[in-house]
Length: 308
Length: 95
Image (cartoon, rainbow over all chains, first blue to last red; front, side, top):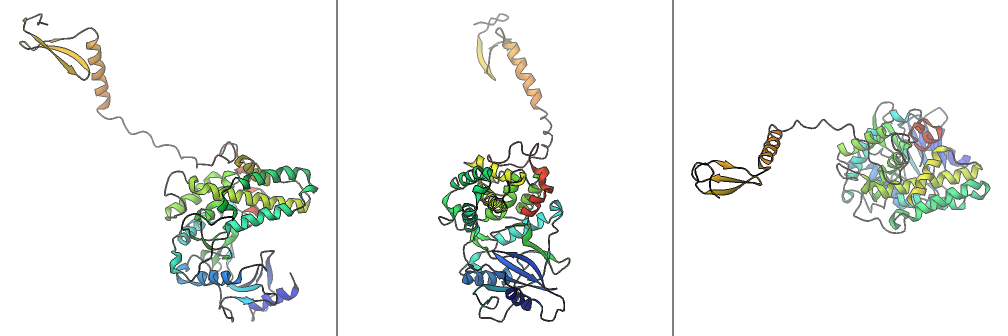
């Protein structure tokens, strides 16, 4: 990330703030710079700006009030989106307090579940459009591509793990691999739910809201429950925490799974996809760092091996 | 057959699957071998049904269902002790 981009983002955060802006995140898929009350985000260079513009209007729409953090306006043709010199979209957001990273059991699992149930209940036909497809399957395919180009040969045990991940990937239906449209009419979904996608706004004790609309769209809503489901299935997330999350989703009328009984008919494919995606990214990272998988990463690869 | 007591004709009836002969004159009943035991068994079944048995004790907290590809021995010897693991902590917050 260039210093010029940080300066540009910093200028978008708080013109009047005397304190230095902080780089909150710097990943290939986005750079976030935070001021005291405002943050600015540079989206991925290959981001579809037209689709992002629709996603921003959805986040700002009254139907999503209390569910999604709304963007702050910018002076630009789309109202919520600026273009950097290289074409990257830039957006502004209110600062929200993230989930404390040290105690996952104390994380707002029930709030996350209720927010998803609310999101899934919004009729896409009532929103600014055209509402783009949810990008979950596209992200899974991208994770596999990243694993395939990683220097796995440097660490011998990673090659066998990569074969297990490929086996799990091959066993998924085409729609989950982003090779066919998702079945069914679909619901409005977040597309990339994890604990980093929740903030309290206004700080410090406002209500929990979902952030990061880059993957939001219409699709298979089970995808939004699939990360916790995958963690639980692989023995990483405590069964009690999974039961809390799923129970709160159902109690809030969430539509991604049947109201009671076994939820796995709806969750199986998305949870397998997220397990494969997470395992593939873990492998790519381990290969880059020239290290073997740790036990958490191994648990995910073991799950992949049982899918084929 | 005729009633051994009053010699009136006896008629065969079926009562809950048990064949009994009843006299048309004195209303006496003749039971074949094993029929008394059958009736006793039916009676004891009836008394067990009424009053109805108390409702079964509530089932213990059901363990959440898991898919076939999930980690074996879910909830007993699973990995979820690792939820304090640093690697899993990072995973909870990353795309």
